[in-house]
Length: 477
Image (cartoon, rainbow, N blue to C red; front, side, top):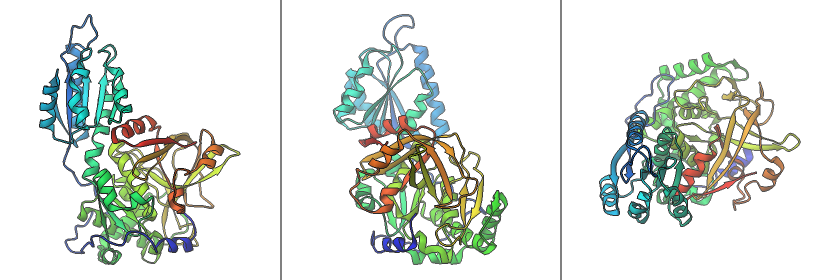
């Protein structure tokens, strides 16, 4: 974050038109809990076994026992994921493939599992002609067809390859294939002004490129929701944040209560509007009524991405990865120390549950906001030293900036910059700093500055996802 004056300048630009939400029909969240993401229609995925199984003791093919094992693992994944519906069949030629695609639907992604040598090349043309996102799963020695998917991808087709003997990779394939459909069902609430790259700020472009709906929220309508937040809900939220904090430093009881009131109102808004994401462009103007940082943390922990400073690129990044890997992201500002070959990421909003909605929360302190004389109430989350991370941002609706690193330091108590901080060792800090955001034409500081951090090395997932969605991947540093 930067200074308050600069933020006020931000408020003079951005999206100014859209749908104004009413204040009727309020549905309260349960005490101290963010609403779960609304249940969308299940993402339909066409699973095609290519050709028939061959003998177990000879030939370039998968055998019947392998086919049955893959069917069983797919059935388990369908149950465990809960938001995918599989349309499964076998195709040995283009006509059979076309019939399965017609059953699955015109935009259905495809998981093609090769069973016999050159079976894939005989049946794939309708998938390629129809522009269906395609993952080819190829067991070792199941044929020579593994050579073709990346050739098709280089020809501009949305195709990628899983050449592996690990049946658990079938579930990962389904996770990635469901992303385009889940994005088309996503509803994003925006408190203007929107920030970010020009395409990401445009609701029309977001809908055209990703299918997601951006709904602009009138701040006066939300102020009414804050005023109407139930006292018992606010009290329970404040008590939970207070009880579970490792330490409370600057915030007073009033600061915590005001932030808790905003948190409850945000939860109610998201529940009522059945939203999958939220971006607020006027964060720094909210202090008199309570900062949204506690509410943002609660929403992200529930699987609902929430972006600070109206940063639509960061919001869309969090939403893409939430759909792909079921994990929250930490949106933050960057700063370098080349003497240590490290990059810091810092922000005053951070999720507690970086490994998913059912994971253990990280410890946290309750702090005052560092840039407004230590007033208000925000979480300082203490993330895990030694943890591998991925730092990324989806920009211009067509490019994914990405790098990996490892957390080498987490301050026990921040003394400058934003409250939640991680220091990560990177491949080449000097090179990364020199090339930082060089692909972005904007001069907007927040668009240049922000990245989203996820736990673990997600580079392979990102490469596959970019191939499936026609997105350019650029490694930073």
